[in-house]
Length: 216
Image 1 (tube, rainbow, N blue to C red):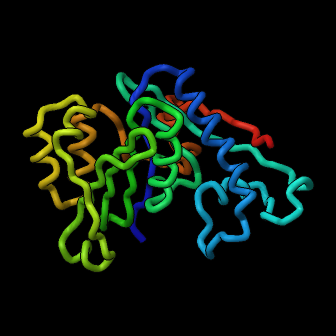
Image 2: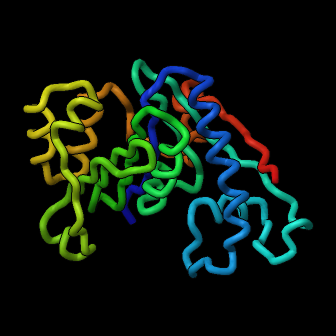
């Protein structure tokens, strides 16, 4: 099996602003309880959060012992990075969309799957502004990756870099090379997952754990 990781990033250095977004994101998990009956076989990020302490979704909502949500955060020069044990490709995009409703700043999500594909997205005010897949044509066909919104101008403005650099970056097919180039353009380390923190003191040193108790 290949490497898998996902993370999301808020364009702010304001710790209070990030804290507010994470509180809203955690609270959104509670609202998911009201629609548990329609959940499919694959639980969403919010449903996974609710279940993470062994709490199953039941119709008896008042008796549920609501768990807490843990995030790991790092504040960079322009972006604040967020990790969570449940983030994965296909899930982190949902989280980014939700989070972007609680801030006036862009939210960037990173989803990397098995060295096959890297999905980059930018959200603003609950709307997807950019979605770009970095992978070969065969992988694109195998995974059915059809819908893209590769807005180079918006991406350049958001990343605060020049248009040519973004266009050259968009032309990369190799997922690992694309991740590395994005790190060079932004100064943000993306090759990371919260599951690796316990085994890597360097990651633990720069990421602070934040715990939010879910409340009705």
